Image (cartoon, rainbow, N blue to C red; front, side, top):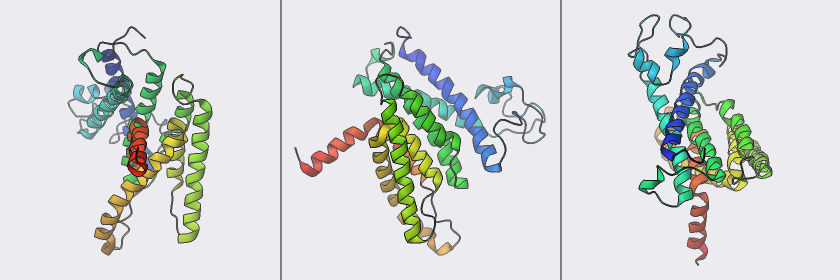
Length: 284
């Protein structure tokens, strides 16, 4: 692994990201409809016929079929390959950002250099989850007001597994990050619900932040929550005023997408932004 250049691993991460994107297409379609992610296996949503594995290849399958189903020749939305390609690019970005941040600068020789340090791999896998998890969180939560457990609870499992890799956060930090971040947000939501006498925080948001705590540690999860809250206020206040006169609940925006957008940025640059904030407030 130490002798394989970065450009090769970038291709691998693109392929992995595209495969994850293909699975996310299944999540986005099936989960809100209450359909199992496992059974029935891949099938045409129109004629219900089984789809062979060769046609399920991310991006390639759509191009092979020229945008039409093999069974009933009905058009297949271009959204599917676009989502897979986007996830592939996010996979590339996950590895490249981890390598670039560790290297401190980007140079021409960076792509031919091998990826050696375990800390880089720990960061790359964590970024992979954070970036690719943002896609289904935003897509499903914005439309159906729920967050897939495969992303939120899966983030807790992924964080604990990644913490085993040397150079990142320790398993104890991962476990405490998940427990305290998730438990703290649940307590805040419970208190707000009692005060406002209505649901103030979805449990999906609690599990999602717990997953971020497992991936980033407690400090990273808290920083993510703060930035997500600021983003939420910036978007929700003007949007709420615009839609308030409709009276149909369209002014409500889920909080999950803000967490999903803030998490990758704070994972990479949270410490640097915190240092800038401290220097700005307290001076040198």
